[in-house]
Image (tube, rainbow, N blue to C red; front, side):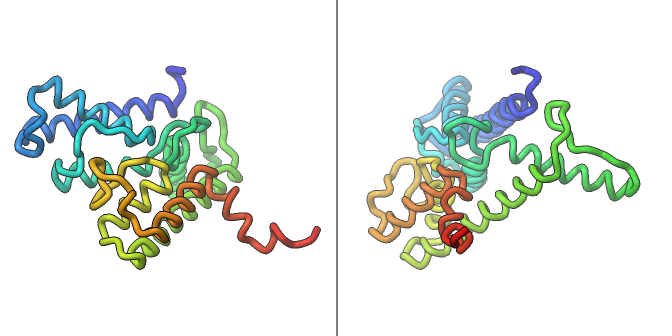
Length: 223
């Protein structure tokens, strides 16, 4: 397991973001007066980071009051997700890793246009079909997030709340940002917004394609 690229990336992301959050909180104690000392700062930072990345849904502190920089970091963490094959929501670490690897591979192919350079994951070659599938999933995921945000805005949510609820619902994260942050619940959402959030949660939980294919003509056409 310690040779697995996803596991190593996952651990580095958790450790890296925890250290960043801890450092910012420690050097700016006025961001949260309820947290003091290095150990408590690190503990709360670690708990919030792990909870958001793994989409566990628990919080021990109000990260939305930690300033705009940390709020932006936690908003970004909502798109990471856990490992492939896990019951966590989000985009999943493996997909992020393969997209980044594919990006660097394209640079190499531009520098060496005649070279045959395979994309490798855990020392095994990854087929082009898998990469296309992941890129397609990424595009649909982001489109779903943007459409979700627009619908929430139409239903009366402010811009920050619409972004947060859309990302949180699609990734099945739990806590959000804005008016529906970690210290609040979704109970104040308008009834239509609750239905839309439920649809996004179903969409994200079943990995997009499983749900969206039902809305295509190919699914209903007679064979």
